[in-house]
Length: 233
Image 1 (cartoon, rainbow, N blue to C red):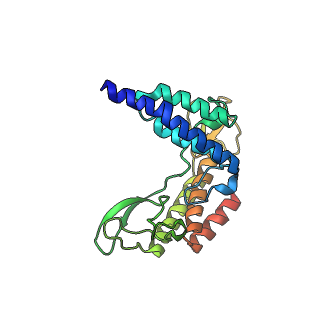
Image 2: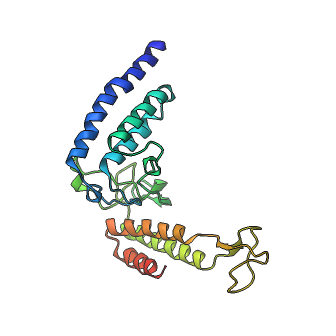
């Protein structure tokens, strides 16, 4: 056990540190900005620094092992210092760059499999060439493509229901949580600010994710619907 622990710590502090330092230096030399990041379904962050995102992603994986937490912390600080970013800066915190959107009860007409699928996950590749991304979702059991038109209709129905729910939501007192009863009032009866049950930025973010899915998968009806709603928000 001690030998294994010693080996893991040496692996991070010596081998990984040497390799990652060189890799970050090469990424910095090549440069790059927002154009370096491919826009995919679920992309919801504005990413501008390839070397920073590389460091955050690798360090997030290494931090999963508590046995090498000290070595990982030292390595992370060193790599961030290499690109001029402070260790506890807000930009140094890893955030999942891919959003999630679950469509429940998707039915396969071929094998009768029914499951919930995350539409933001990319469909499998035709081959090793990343340019050959499939533009359809398929059953994980038998590989039969799902009906894109049916998926689009379901997504439009979800968009309509989310929009109605947003428009008919309650406004509540931030202090008591009570529902506001006075029309056009800017404050509650106890003079506390009012807030929406569903914040505007949350509703806007969900529509942006669906719009991104529509654009990537060439769902024109859905794309037109989401674009019209986004312009009105």
